[in-house]
Amino acid sequence: MNFHTFRIHNGHSIYPKLRFNYLSTEQDRREWGEAVRCARNILNQPAFDEYNAGELSPGPQVESDEEVLEWVAKDGETALHPSCTCKMGTDGMSVVDPESMKVHGVENLRVVDASVMPYITNGNIYAPVMMLAEKAADLILGNSPLPPEDVKFFRTDQG
Image (tube, rainbow, N blue to C red; front, top):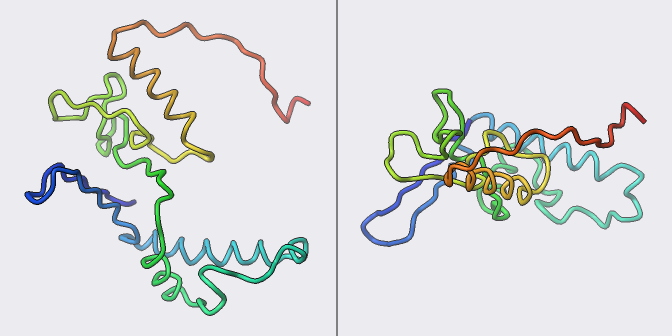
């Protein structure tokens, strides 16, 4: 598990500083090597031959886990979708109260963005963030939640 830090004021700048602590755990480092090997395995399958002009990044010369980690440390980026850095929940690792969106132990501070997601979503974070914002707006304004609806949706196991 990564632990991210956030500093509001460091004495030199008025802008907050985010430190994501990438590669700070053994799990992070192990999973990067696994991810690159898995991607190479998939993309080098015969079905991709007509599209495969060779690996561009990190490049075939990057082979060992140590070389992969050097590449990630040098070239890795967030793609501007950081999430899960300020977990919403009620357990000891949670930072935000799901009933109010307030930060535990801090007065008058709410967090309503992708950082409160306990786990990263499988797709783009735009729709889940909009859902969080809508729900948080209702919580903050004291609006009653809408009643649940029984909505039909497609399920692969029900044809």
